[in-house]
Amino acid sequence: MATTQQNYILTADPLSLDRIRSILNRLEDTIIFELIERAQFAHNPKIYRRGEFEELQSIGFKGTWLEWFLKETESFHAKARRYTSPDEYPFTDPAELPQPVLKGVELPKILYPNKVNANKSILSFYTRSIVPRITAHATLALAAAKRAKGITGDDEYEDDGNYGSTAVLDVEVLGAISKRVHYGKFVSESKFRADPAAFIPHILNPNRAALDALITKPEVERKLLQRLRKKAEVYALNFSPEGEPSGDAGRKIDVDAIVELYEHYIIPLTKEVEVDYLLVRLEGMSQEEIEELATSKKA
Ligand SMILES: O=C(O)C(=O)C[C@]1(C(=O)O)C=C[C@@H](O)C=C1
Image 1 (cartoon, rainbow, N blue to C red):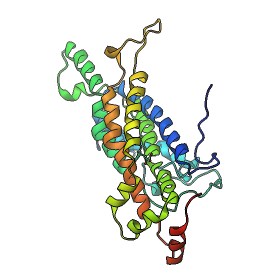
Image 2: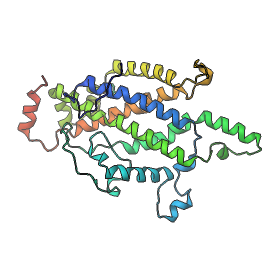
Image 3: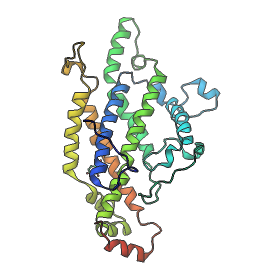
Image 4: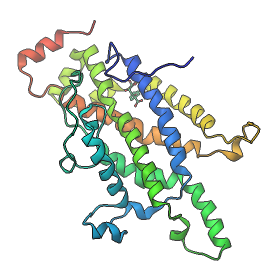
């Protein structure tokens, strides 16, 4: 039977850690599938460099091809009030995005007001480390095909000319990773409310290492990486016309690349968001309010 996935607004207890982890689990599927889609195209490094497309210069856009796609896509989404939701963050500077056309919705105030935004780091590691890694096999195939036609040069081998399709998929992957990483704020709020007294001294006397130790759950990370590898191995399979899985030879994506993406980038950045969020968690609160919070505990 199909199960439904509720986002943070619909659920009765939005700060239930099990519920939040089930959303993170579901986002693993989204991220793996989006990466598989992206990996069918070559690296196309031109779309991540400024000044490569005359057409953009002629319309006065100074960023990269990908930044142009992000800005245009996010402009529409901003009008449809996407970024008024606390689990949605644009890559474009919000000052450059239009105001929502739709009237605001009354959202439950679950998170403490904050400006934590990890999208700059996400864009950087995605374009510099992830894309070259997951497209390596596409680059090899392209190199063989181009060499057969007498075309030479590393730049040529990395470029299949599908700049539009590539950027559309990059926007999708980045949105999914961003949502996943920023869910760290909900995780953090949940852990904080479960035991405020443990966190408060390290927030008042800012201590990143102590906060990091409080939010880190090695066993959860270990199981996550194990599950992720199994999922990626299955989702990346190719099937014969008769429906037989074709095995290791025919995987659509490098499974190790997905596991490393989580191990070295997504989990560490989620933890960074958790700690950044905690560090501003008491801003603007009076001494009395903090003392009251320190003695409170979630039932
Ligand atoms: O599930 C949690 O408790 C989280 O904080 C999320 C997360 C993750 O990014 O998956 C991060 C830190 C923990 O060590 C375990 C997992």
